[in-house]
Image 1 (cartoon, one colour):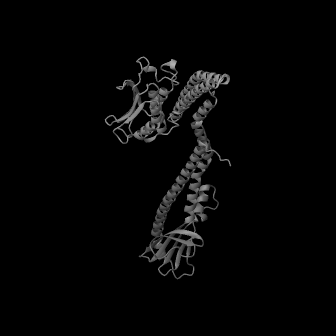
Image 2 (cartoon, rainbow, N blue to C red):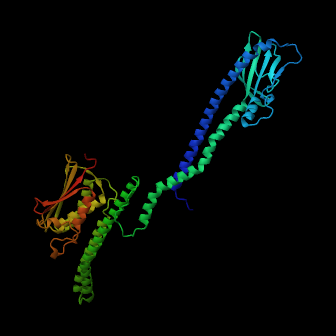
Image 3 (tube, rainbow, N blue to C red):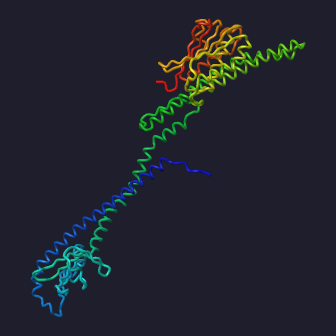
Length: 470
C-alpha cells in the first residue's frame, strides 16, 4: 500500500487559497450584513420623511371628503400618469420604485378614504403609531403609521421590502463581481509567491543531488534566505562529522591492517612449525605459541572493534554507579591477578558514586588499565584501584596504580597513541589499550592523566563528572 508524500508546495498553496477564500467570504458576509443594516436605516428614515410630508399635505384634504360617498376610496396616481413612455434608465427606475411605494388613509371607523394606485385594498397597518412590518399577498411591506387627532384619521405609508432586497442584492453583486474577476489573478499571484518562496529549497536539493558521493565539503550557496541557513548549517555539520568519521575509520583500518600483518605472520609461522614438527614435544611447543598468537590477534581485533563503537550517537548514556562497576571488574579480574602471583585491592569510602555514561565502556576501561598494570608488574607486584569523590569540583577521581617499573618521561606523551607499545622488543600488547582508554574517557567528558605512583609504578588518574554536579 503506497502513501502520498506530504508536499509543502501543495500545503502552502491550498492553505493560502483556502484562507484567502474564507477571508473574502467572511468579509463579504459581514459587509453585506452591515450594508443591509445601513440600507434599513436609510430607507426607514426616508419612509418616515415621506410620511411626514403626506401627513401634513393630506390633513386638510381629508376634511373635505364626503365619507358617506359611494366613490371612496379616492385613488391617487403617480409618475406613470405623468411619464407616458420612459426614455432612459433613470425614468424606468423611478417608475419601478414608485410602484413599490404606497399609502392609505383610514377614518376612525376603519373605512378607507384615500390610497395610492400602488397600495392594496387591505389595510397596510394597524391602529398603532410607529414602524411595523406586514405581509400581504406574499409581499412584505415596511409601514409607518400616524394618527391625526384633529381630523381623526390614520395614515399608513408603506414601502415594499423587495426594494431593499433588490438594492442589497445589487450591491452584493457589484461587490462580489470584482472579487470573482480577480480570483484567477489572485490564484496566479499566490502560486507565483509560493513557488518563489520554495525556490531556494529546490536549489539546495539540486545542489546536493548533483554532488559526488565523496564530496563532503561544506555547502556554500550565496543569497539563501535566513530560514534555509539552519538547514544548510545542519547539513554542513553532518558532512563534517561524516568526514571525520570516515577519516577516523580509514586511519584505524590502515593502522589495523599494518599491525595485524606481524601477528598474523607469527601465527602462520607457528602453524607451519606445528605441521613440520618431527616429534610431539616440538609440535606441542609450536601449538602453544600458536595459541598465544591467536589470542593476541583476537584481543587486537576486539580492541579495534570496541574503539570503532565508542560513539556518543550509538552508545546510550545512563546514570550508573561507579562503585558497583569497579567492584565487579576487580572481582572478575582478581583470579587472573592472583594466578600471576600478584595482588589487587579496591579502596573507596563511598558506598555509591553516581556518574552518567556507559557501564559497558567503563568495564572495558578498567579491564584495560588493570590488565596493563598486571602485564608490566613483576611477580608479587601490587595493583590498587580506588575512587575518591570531590564534591567541591563535582567530579570523581578513579585511580589504577601498580608497583611496576613505571613509564619514562619521554614515553608519557605517546602512550595513548594507537599501536604505540612500550618495550617493543618484548612484544607486550598491541598498543591499543591506552588509546581505547583515552577514547572512553573522552566519551564520558572526563580527563586522563599519568603520574608516578607512591607504589613505585604508574598512576593512571581518570577524572569523571558526577551526575547533576553543579
